[in-house]
Amino acid sequence: MSKLRIAIQKSGRLNEDSMAILKDIGIYIDNGKDQLKASAKGFPVEVFYLRNGDIPQYLKDGVVDAAIIGENVLIENGNGIKIAEKLGFSSCRVCIAIPKSAKYSGVQDLEGKRIATSYPNTVQDYLDKKGVKAELHIINGSVEIAPSIGLADVICDIVSSGSTLFKNNLKEVETILKSEAVLAVSPKLSEEKQAILDRILFRIQSVLKGRESKYILLNAPNDKIQDIINVLPGMKSPTVLPLAEAGWSSVHSVISKNQFWNVIDELKANGAQGILVCPIEKMVL
Ligand SMILES: Nc1ncnc2c1ncn2[C@@H]1O[C@H](COP(=O)(O)OP(=O)(O)OP(=O)(O)O)[C@@H](O)[C@H]1O
Ligand SMILES: O=P(O)(O)OC[C@H]1O[C@H](OP(=O)(O)OP(=O)(O)O)[C@H](O)[C@@H]1O
Ligand SMILES: [Mg+2]
Image (cartoon, rainbow, N blue to C red; front, top):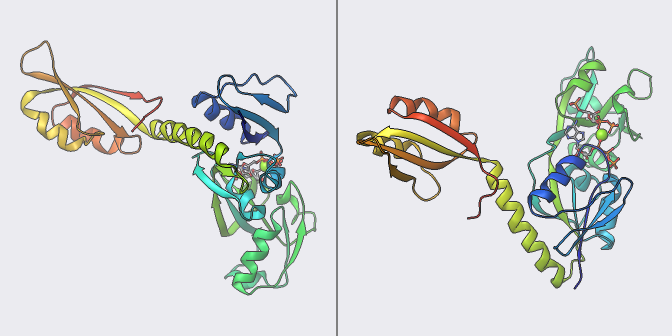
């Protein structure tokens, strides 16, 4: 039986979360140090440890079938590669930044400027769309230093917290795109491998739904149960169980992680007590 070849970043920002999601979907690998390829136990998958920047070419050539990769790298260099799922980690944006002291009134101010970047295709596409001509300088790292050493007037690089820009006396003036880690798929995927990928996608979706949800349990007087149910929609409908103490019930439900703090006051106002909020490992719908 053939195995699905999945590439993940060998080391860097995506490695740890990529390993974690594989583990959460039941793909266990013995990742000995310096191992570049490993077979999963009990599942038809082989994991390849590669440089993030090299992965698009491997996908295009069908050397690997799928990969966990930054969406920004696919936009830069991934024509024809499809995204099967957004994975919700390594969120960042690709931005244009200029020295803090420089004036900026719009994208036309980039005309004729020297722009240092590791993402030349992304920047060129953006400039073409805006009808601006500039000179690109391609560098592979420490892009933010370029203006202070006189290599460029402007940079285009990844921004997350903004602290690298701040430390280098730069300010963000344009956001070109937003990115997060994604599961990308080779255009050369066979039908047999598509079936393995479908099983993986189903598992990933269960893990992602679990990550964004919480299990909530609370106690409330019976005459308040309907009000509480109205606040807590749940997956289908909440479970209501009688407590040993007469006149009281326990309500169990699932709630979006982001909704919880918005409804907590309403729950308390409706007489909820002993509220427990627990993580959900997987959610199969
Ligand atoms: N500061 C950041 N915050 C959040 N995500 C980031 C940040 N910097 C990069 N990323 C995301 O993580 C991906 C990997 O970044 P990282 O710096 O680890 O590797 P790289 O040097 O771009 O690639 P390679 O594996 O080829 O060396 C980027 O493509 C981007 O999607
Ligand atoms: O907005 P921030 O939170 O400061 O993050 C942005 C920085 O993170 C990335 O660099 P990284 O640390 O990955 O170093 P690298 O250039 O060696 O890849 C990116 O290239 C920026 O320099
Ligand atoms: Mg980096």
